[in-house]
Image 1 (cartoon, rainbow, N blue to C red):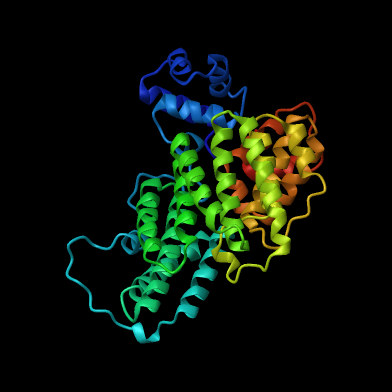
Image 2 (cartoon, one colour):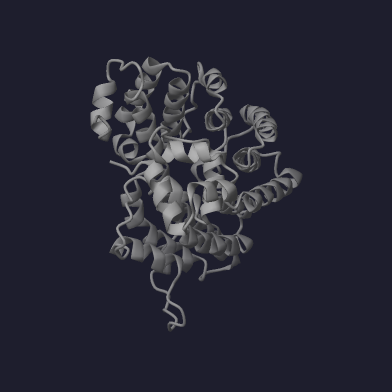
Amino acid sequence: MAEHLGDRLSRLRRLAGHTQEGLAERSDVSVDVIRKLEQHRKHSARLPTLHSLARGLGVELTALLGDPPAVPSSGEADPPQLVAVRRAIMPPLFAPPVEPAGAEALSPSLLRAELTEAWTLYHAADFGRLIDALPGIIADARLMAAVGGPEQRAAGQAALGKALQLGGHLAIRLGKTDLALSALERAHLAAGDSSDPLLAPMVSNSVAWAYQRQARLDDARNLAVHAADGVEKEHTHTSEGIRVWGALLMSAATSYARSDDYATANDMMTTAEKAAGRLAGLPPPVDGKLVSVFSRSSVRIERVRLAVQHERPEEALRLAEGMRLSSDIPPSWRTWLLLDVARAHTDVGHAEGAVKALESLRRVAPAWMRHHTLAVAVVSDLWAGPSRPVGLRKLAEFLGVDQ
């Protein structure tokens, strides 16, 4: 069973040497909220509140939210597979140069196919297979970026940038934000020498996400807005450009929302949703899985998430009602939507609707659900509630909160 948010908050507060009153003053969060969390009278909190608590504690947001799914902190050294990923992202310093070998077997089309499959694994949360495959893909891309004519090297740099960007995303999911930023810095350098003008802003969006996880909301917002402005000036006549621009708008909106400026965030998300409507009149991207996730469905999913996080459950349910997800929405986004809908139903006291959404979530992503802090919190809230609809007991037993 995942550690309760209140227990984690109490432990981090004591390690930092703060009283409940002291943390309330440092984080500008009500001492009553802190007490209720630590006493298990409150199982979750708004995301802006969690960001404030993380700043008051002097920790990254991930330390407060807990470990990502299936990656518990044990204090032990990284497993060999993750060491291999680290070595691929950051080759040994001051080592003798390695003679390129196997370059004749490489082709840009084959490498892009490998990258497409790797990003598919990522969006399906199949991190085990991705960890095994990623070092080889990075090595192939690095080799292609170093040999051949200018055109092949530029294509190799584009592949290397996408591979390192993927390494950054994976590292964020594993709670290794410093490794993520190292990977993304290298990805941005590769983008500068690549044949893809949209790669650098896509990498910037990934960096903004890493900053959000570190509670660096101003840095995340400024980076996303700056990159979006650059894409808007030159690339919004193509579907690829609109997708990258729209994803950056969504990222900036998320940072505004987590800074408790919901009005600005909502305005930006509305603009993004209108921009997504333009995609229907344009040819689709050649390699859609290598371009930012952005569509009417993804914008609506994110709007539901922000509404839930700002304690606007009725608005979240209205946004989610009748939603038909497009076929290109990754499985990970679908799981988040189900969890957010369950949370919104819980917040309005509709336990039956929450259980229905949670049962769907368990069918599509059981391992993800078992380890996710918010899923455990939602089921805990339902279990402690006045009514226990059919199906809730099985969910509570599955997550170990049926005591």
